[in-house]
Image (cartoon, rainbow, N blue to C red):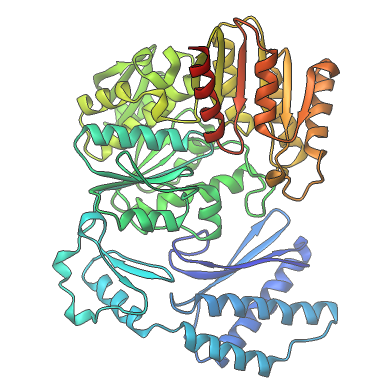
Length: 561
């Protein structure tokens, strides 16, 4: 039995639709029932001694252990997390025979922590917001009422009295949530562009930035609940929020209600992490976004993804489908029932309401599809079109948005550049599904020879790293340049990930002399460009971020005239 993590769940999560404290424990199956019973008893004892209200408990079995959680007030989540840690120590002492914690001293410390964390004004304001059907968003520093252009925000320690608030002043705005394994960021960018064409002021949070229309407010990974809250406090009239696996698993959903939630696909990625060690567990994490729309919104799903199709059978809410195959039985039966679907029929993108069809545009008219060779971006375009349709965009808005967004407005995702007579493809592929999509693009682009620059994060399982390598080799490569960034060792020794990749390449038949190892992506890229002659294609997969690579490409373009 091993302690893995204790943390706050600040929004709807795998365990509850309300805030909670969760404890992850590695253990075998026969230990889990005993641990859960002892943990519940310890939590109940400690929580009661602290004078807190009764709680509800939950247990989820994961590969390699269990996750247990209990509900807690929003101003006692740090306290609840410490209670979980103490409860684990108590149970572990009983199981392993180690030294038991000094409970009396620990309770004195926790009472002080409880008093420091307590925010009675927040409780009163939250209850009043619930009665007035007004969205309240909270974190350690700020509390806000309403969303977007009508939001009001206060410091967490200087809240207004509930009876002084003009509740009619605070309203919601249309909100879309986007999750999935691949294509999230591109879909968010396409959706934002469409809605801007439609005249909206659009705020987005994503793995690359927070932006209002074309103005970047903050750079970096903002795909968690913190990014969602920050966008919803901006002066925007529509919000598109990317929800990545890490934020969903570690904190839960950033908001309780949305108008539309989209799941692009489910494929192998991050499968080494506790809570998402299998595709079934990963699907459960991504499926959390459905909680925000099950009562009064629309869930947009990929009809070409077998796991999403199977999961949708038990879903009680409204669904819209998108897909690359118009004869997909999921789509045809959905349309027969009068449902909304976005489909590709040959090169035509069609918006379908029941049996009626409207031509949106042709695939080759959409810049990010690279003339139709980037088929995965055709799927992303359909997904964005479905999301925007639910949010009220008209077919002409969607057409102008999809055909108007250039490659440069989707940096680091399926970008193609010409440097003299050499061609460069830049992408972010880092799992087997994404690499398969890149391989399709790379094979569709004419080239005398092809070189690949890529790497992998060390926290991926060995087999996933090998699977990505197999998909890469299927491109048909003359040279492979493997970069190992120190920030991505993630528990592995230097050279270990490279060793796995090299071993798999050799097994597949690569010439050892055609595989190079570099520490930096910039060095890999420079070596590949030195190798490349006229007519060759260099594929650059920028794991560490596309910014430096794109800057170097711009410099090369200027230098070659």
